Each structure stands twice: as C-alpha cells, then as structure tokens.
Image (tube, rainbow, N blue to C red; front, side):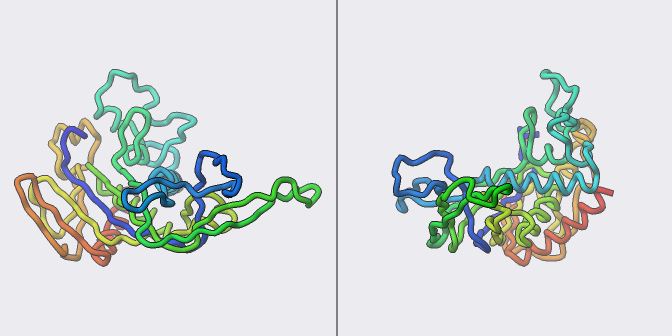
Length: 291
C-alpha cells in the first residue's frame, strides 16, 4: 500500500504550555554548573541551540493513549489493540508473507503506528519553539517512605515554564477511523489526560495542542463534503487482501478554505474551525466502526 499514496492528512499544530514541561536530555553534561536534569536541546540554523520536543516523545504518549482507548472498547484483539508482550499482532506470520497479509493481521493500533513488520501510517515531527521558551531551575529531593527523610538528592531540574512550539502530524494512506483516534488523542491532550515528558505525577507535562491548519490530499477528485479513507479508494482485490471496508468515508458539514486540483488529485485546506467540525464527524464515524 505504501507504493502509492491514495490520501494523506497533514496537521500544523501550535503547542502551548499549561504546566511546567521537562523532556530530559539523554546525556550528562560535564559542566557542573548545569542542572542534573537538562531539557533536551538541538541546533537550528539562525537560532543556535534551542530546547525542543522530540517527535518520539509525542508519538509515544499518543500511541499509548490510543491503545488504552482501543483496549477499553474492544479489548486485546485485532479490532482493538494488541498486548505487545503476548504478540497478538502477526503472531504466526512468517517472514516471507505479503504486506497485505501483515496489515490484515495487525490490530488497529499497529495499523496506525506500525510494528516490527509493518510501517506505521502516522509521522510526528519534532516540535521547535515558535516563541521565546523560558526555562527555570527547580530543586527536588526523594523522600524515603520508611524514614520520611531525604533518601536521594537534592537534585536540579530544568523545566520550561512558558512559551510555545510548532509541529506537524502527517497521516498517510489512512482509514477513516484513524482520523477519529487522532482527534480523541488531541482532545484528551488538551483536557490534561495525555501528558508529555518527565514528572507527570508532579503535575508536569500538560500542553495544549491547537490545530492551525489541516490539509487533506486525495488521489483523484472526491466530493467536497466527504472525507475518504483508503477503503473507499481501493480496488475490490485490495479490499479483500488488506481487509478494508468499502464504505470507508464520513460526511463533513463545512467547506474547505482553499482547494487545489492537479493531475495527481485534489488538495483541500481547512482552518481551526474546519478541523473542529471534521474531528467531530470522525469521532462519530469511529463510534460506529467500533460497534
């Protein structure tokens, strides 16, 4: 299926801090003046060294939340989310099987995020500052539960306390239900259920993710009031081989802000309000798909 691109969704997001945030650097600096736990940094042309949120940090917590939601509704099944320790997905699949058989034998979470034999459909880019991100040093200790005295520490933490970041989520060759799962993950992140980074039980890691622009690409022309998944755009053979649903689409009640057509297909661009309407429709579709 990755040999062609039938559809894609690109979300441009702004992330703003609702509580202190710490994404710990993996290395230890030899500089004794720096804190014990440093915020991860990278070099950006023209800006020098800046703090940033790795895409893997966001993808990990979003996948975990999506898996939890699927298991709550459908259990540890192929229609829900597998238990990676029990290898429900592609359990008895050999190495020399078709990609369609691997996709068909994977749970919904693995179809969206991938597994050891299947490339995921979603990519989450690193988040770089779009404003001045301020950090401060906080001090802490570990308290013994037995003696109620200091067990470890003191230690220092560098946390981001204000500012914002920008990033992109890209979903390619998606089934319509995966748009609903992504919408739920972003909604719950904004409500504080999905937290990022270190110290979640300390109140760290709450961020607000606001979609600034949503861009859909479809191969060929599609109705303006419908979002098509790959099931709607696939041949009868692929429907059977990949286990896709023929009626893989949902209706939307809002017009795109911009539309472009070329030889490859159509591109439709929505603003925040447009994405909000699409997200609500996708959750309705997901609810029906999981019945």
